[in-house]
Length: 171
Image 1 (cartoon, one colour):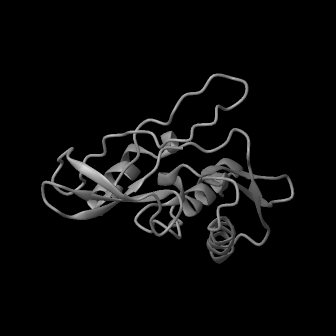
Image 2 (image 1 turned 60 degrees about the horizontal axis):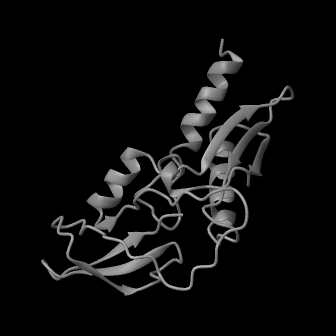
């Protein structure tokens, strides 16, 4: 007989394998957006997701994919909840997720900026950052576009190996 704990663990294992629609080499668990899976008293599986940023267009796809996988695994009642607090940070990308990004030629983000409580300062100039090339490891890189295929990534080029690559921004 399957216990409630085993059933929740099974639901988690199913949900954690759902790929991110924009970075398909990562699962939602790798990305850190899958916040939890629970089961209510009536047997409803509740998965909690946090968007990478407010208005993330991939969120609808993530919700639909998690729900479809759970229903496909036999869970009749599935609810997907969006959790906004605390907000997602790129620090939640797992070490395995960072490794997968690098293996696929995408530079993983550095540590997210830390801010004091209170008003967020307006900064008009882009932050200077060193982004290592995910292909050859050289630090001599340059940003070629602030935005890539998605607004959470930028385009860079390595001056050493001359290869272009995407970079996931710190948030």
